[in-house]
Length: 111
Length: 110
Image (cartoon, rainbow over all chains, first blue to last red; front, side, top):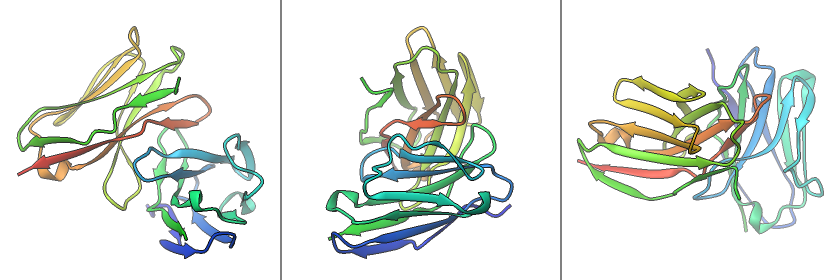
């Protein structure tokens, strides 16, 4: 079974620029998550999709972050404009039960 | 009060030691508890899960839930250098929504 694929692995941008991350979940997993993990902290849920509908986006900074899930499969997370405090690893995960399977993450550095 | 709290460590032990990792949580309604392991520059992976109270054992690993004190633990016996990683406690709060503790960094010295 192929795992969760994310790209890019690393991204360095200047503050106020925009950036997008892509995620391809495990086939058949209806639930998809984006987490933000700041160095030294646990993952924080940004948004949860069930198929292509949003279940929870209460912690997504909607003035600068947006996410969509295309046809209930792939997903993109966008930040515009980026701030220094957005420097973190962005993890995508998918599930069909309580267990979530994570990708390797995209490490974003905002300078 | 955070929904789940975990001491970030780091915790350094010699090879062969018994390791105890712990978390506390705030909501007594939570039922599904998990431990994830995260190696450096990798995503977390599920190590163990327990439903409601009690113990669960898998090889050198034992997960324990005490719902009366809202305390969850992970014990690692005969720890190995390959166990060096960050261990994240996690709780399913319903609807497959998972919240994570801060993670405890563990170093096992050969």
